[in-house]
Image (cartoon, rainbow, N blue to C red; front, side):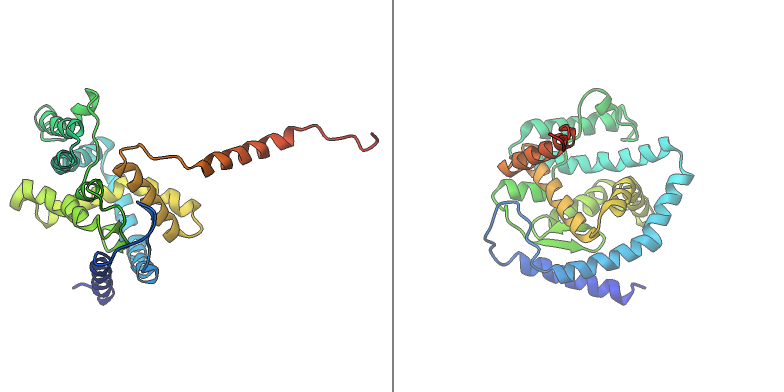
Length: 260
């Protein structure tokens, strides 16, 4: 039985995503467009409440029960399945190098890595490169999209949501078929939540407004992914660094003798 709060949150978030995709936006490319902040904050509060009561405790128990090697193996297994989707989207973006690397990772880890339980490819210097359909759409010119905090998925945009749903849910199901049942899907979800514990713990310790922190961190990560790490540096950053250097140097200036 799904609680009414979750049903309402899911419907509202889906409505926001649909409406957001139907109107053009004016402003900087890859900027933050949180036009429905009140609805998104409501979704965030509900999911945070559920995570506090259920998600985090179960993820911590998962870490406590399983040895590290077992956790890594499960995480590698599901990442190996999703790497097929990353390879396909890299090719759709014309990034044949990343696509070939990801495809090579799948072949190596599926064979030498025992169905992906061991990340042999990384040991060989073939690193994973995250690609998804949202990045593909951005590469094709869809660079402005409204922010949505979607139940279960978390922070995303109207552009990224279809790719997120496919990458997280459909991608492993298509490869495993009926073997990806409720139990396997639960282990997959638990493994991903466990992997994110360090990030959410750091956020909870540092953030005054967890919603804003999550939104801004998501946007910066998406910019980095979409631009393949080649994020342009704003001149204002250098001004801020100069100001910081001035503040650091100021205490080292000898104090003037009042008698002089």
